[in-house]
Length: 268
Image 1 (tube, rainbow, N blue to C red):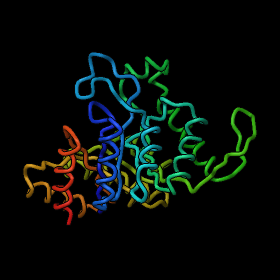
Image 2 (image 1 turned 120 degrees about the vertical axis):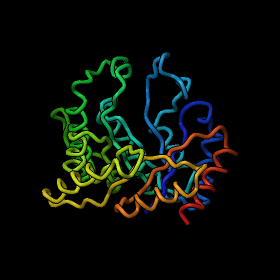
Image 3 (image 1 turned 90 degrees about the vertical axis):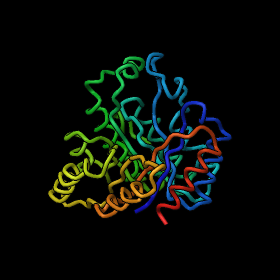
Image 4 (image 1 turned 180 degrees about the horizontal axis):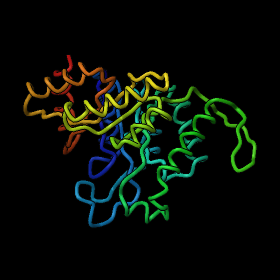
């Protein structure tokens, strides 16, 4: 099982010094991947933990790919309804091209009412928008000449398509992951919570004659309890999880380094 690390592209930790130091440290320690999150318009009454400061997810991925050389870079997750389809597809293709095909693209529906309101997007349409986004992305990465709004155009650069991991644990999200994704990336507290949904995902994939082994899990570890953390890792691995994306709080770069060294000791 691969181990990925969340890097805070929000709050006081989202400076270029801390983000670059965190990314390079993860690469030096041979973690498989680093991941960032997507928020675009945090309301004042919901800013705890970030102060409303979020560095854009695609800008972060592009910058982190330039700072690093070999580690994979991931979105956990890019909120499709927040973004125009064509410019976003162009950004994703550019990041994949310039990173040397290191992108892991997590895609989700979004949930925060205030962000949809700020963007003028009807939250009720988020599923439809996401399906359209994923369908267009697959077409764009499959051929040089594509069409949108009755206009043909060339989609270049066209690097290999990054794998699409669809977020969410609702029935419709699992169905979308099986039908339109290459994998699934749920947020899970404990391995036991995943069992039934994992069965449902694998069953859907089997009915579609698709692989079902591309499952990444976003979860935390209790780094104050090495035994329970190691047990959690083992349970996920025994379930056949491809990757654990580990999220955790840290005050500064020194705190981050201490914590990833603990994580590294658990997985070796």
